Image 1 (tube, protein in one colour):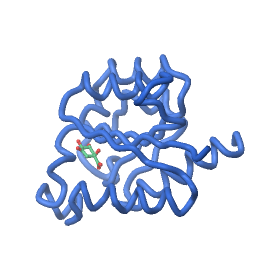
Image 2: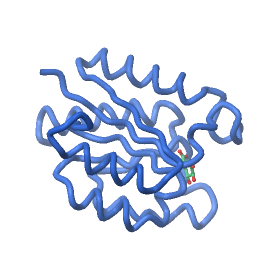
Image 3: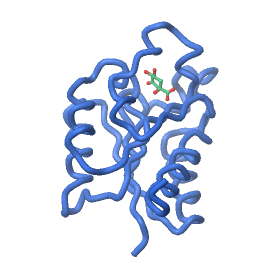
Image 4: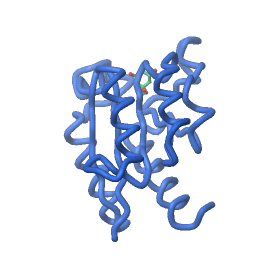
Length: 152
Ligand code: DQA
């Protein structure tokens, strides 16, 4: 069975392509997700995608990733947007499930405003990737598949 990766995108990522293009680039979310899906497929994995501007939807997606139902996934690529920096609920959801999660950002959050240097979720993720634009998502998929396939 092909591994399934859930990509979760949080608040304002639906605006990609128009939003602060100097920071986030010109690709739309649909274009970015098509590119990520193609990358995962080239590695034999399947991608599902959820985007929401609501914290509770992201918590639910993480919870469902660990369930046996429709939302189930082997691992999660999470770009929680600004929620990264303050959502204890999201952190608790990640800590509660036995599914590896990679914190992922398009921009290098550590080269930006101080409030972006704090992550509420990093400590419960298997790792953090930021600063590579759309390639951040490729790297996150690769890191997850490596973990899932080898245990490393
Ligand atoms: C972001 C970085 C966050 O600080 C910001 O709030 C976002 C996007 C990124 O992908 O670079 O919405 O997660």
